Amino acid sequence: MNRRSVLLFVVASLAYGTAFVGIKAGVATLPPVLFAALRFDLGAALLLAAVALRYGVRGCLPRGRRDLLGVGTAGVFLVLINGVTLFVGQQYTTSAAAAVIFGVVPVATTPIAVVVLRERLSLVGVAGLVVGFAGLVVVVQPSPALLDGTGVGEPLVVCAALSVALGSVLLRRIQPPMGSLPLTAWAMVVGSIGAHALSLALGESTAIAWTTRELAAIAWLGTVSTGMAFPAYFALIRTAGPVRANLVAYVVPIVAAVSGAVVLGESVAVTTAVGFVVVLCGFALIEYETLRRDVREAWAELRPLG
Image (tube, rainbow, N blue to C red; front, side, top):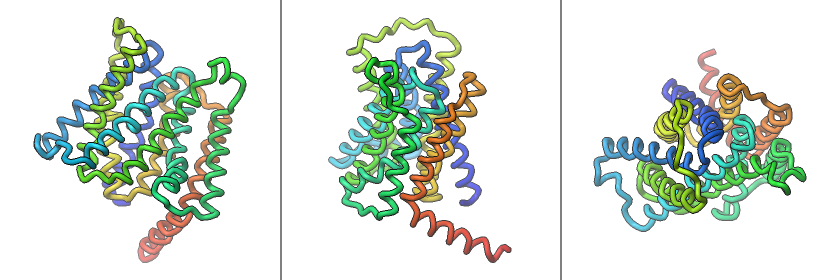
């Protein structure tokens, strides 16, 4: 990874990691679905402005069936379902736990890709899935509390992570011709409309006594954790490759844990930390061949310098 890739990696990790703290801070007083919709509003406005400046108004519009399918898929799975279940779920769990659960996205993507894309999975990969699932169980800790509704936070975040995994695989199958940045911008518009409609259907109150805390949470999520995070992540995929880019998912929980402790005074449960390590081991097993190849290539590049 060159200096630009390292900078993009740091920006994406910090932007995504602090998003969980921003969500946790906002859902304490804001209706969660409306809060998600407002985040999407601001993010969509910033991303559409950036796309229009880069591509022009005509260049950022979806063209053809595959573009429309791509925007719809990303808008429903990557933005709407993901955002709503995450925001509602974070009312009942910590920033660190939510971020660790999201770290299972690369692991969850594999079995979905096997079914949808007919990709093959080795025995080592199967072992990685089992290990990754075990780590998720350690973090979520299924218990009778789910039956009375007091332990729904982690399962809702799991739904958000699974929605991202499914949406990512479906996008790979659709392969929309339009660029990733305009696709994300229009997907944010779809998610915003859907979230506002759902908020109205749920009867969430729009009479909000705005304070600096709520405004800061929306501003941070809409600008840094959306307007900066998505472009940085997509640029990282182009410069460093998808495998290295996906390692962001394993730095994000650390950022979320530290920022949650500093900003909100949250503590990290031992089971959350243990579960994070187990999920990371599962990912390493699934991507064993790719990681081994990358390590060999990196070592070959470093040897002449020694």
